[in-house]
Length: 149
Image 1: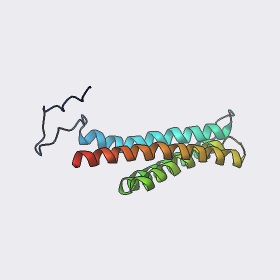
Image 2: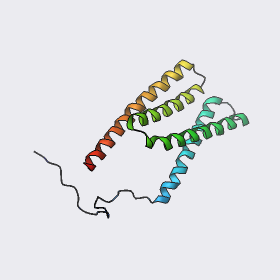
Image 3: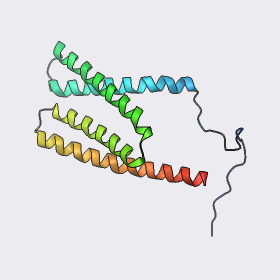
Image 4: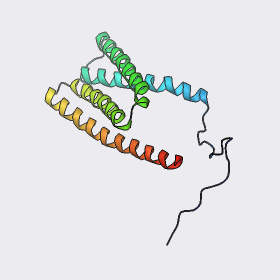
């Protein structure tokens, strides 16, 4: 019968635990904490504005709509990202799923489809996101509990 290989006893940190696999410094993480919401917001705003104009010409109102949508998305993303780590796994997965479903529903609603269609697709995306995120948080917390215990 095959058995797992023993863990490496190579590099250890001062506390006696295995060294971190994080290869980026604090400066890179701080930069990404600002860059990720900005880039995602701009992509989301462009996508919403493109959906709203439906292939027509780009107008000033369309640009304003895109930038306001980008700002709202960035603010929502930053708020969810700030609150989520403080929650337990079920509410955290529900919060991210709600945010994902809402964003998806908004994008779909800008195409001119019915409210029922956009709400149905938003709920489907939110349910799928909840299932994936809940599983991820369960596995991560269980793995951390086993390492500690």
